[in-house]
Image (tube, rainbow over all chains, first blue to last red; front, side):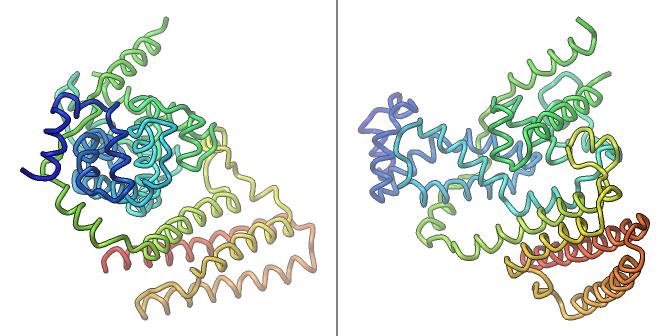
Length: 191
Length: 177
């Protein structure tokens, strides 16, 4: 039995799935216990991947790299986690920071962003209307900044003030980008 | 409630109902573990982040100085077409501030580029610099001429555009390496 399996087995699989039990594993990981960190990774990576995948516009490979970057950063920063917030909240915010500062995404943003009045919204894939796939494709097709704000605000529940701080933009810009994103999505999804 | 409100409400309901989790197609732990054991190359990471910040910063500076965005962008984004309103001194101040920031990062004309591309970029910069020199001389003789200030702002915009392209090329080169 591997180290992680032992840890999970000792605590019971059901308990191990509870995010509230992160503290013990965080504490062990802070002491350099990689097996404990793997437990945290296995618990939280689906959520982290879901976030990275949407921020990366559905680019699976880039999303995988961002997930790894986020967990590497979490490992190196774990010492600064004091437990004031839940580990999942801390990790989520750290992931957003990693994704938004990723140079590949920033590069794409620089290359693809155009003045607002010159946006040509061209969905990449025609999917069946009314399905999640249809909506995911529409989100992935949004301009980078508009997609970032929409994902963080409407899907992940961040406030404009938080997005402004994380993305380094004015709060008004965040609101404007959200308005723009929703408008583009409605246009795309309308029959 | 209008049709648009209804449509937006339905959209928000669908967005909030999207699954937040996604299962990786492959197990990422082994490669992640390898990275943890290898340790992070912090210095490289920081240099890349600084380069990316530079690219974004230059883009913003171009918008600030040149005001290339249209009225819609001005109303929404907050960076309006201010170039035509600025004095020559204001334009110069804004531009020199951006250049100072860039030099502070050590990422201006010394960015890593292929030799041929470096020569092309420097030739472009030299042309713009010579034009700027002539316009500045004209402004000294006729400081109230708005068209000269506009011309200078336009030249600054062009120079920053060249520097931005250099930064992008440098980043792409790093990315390919």
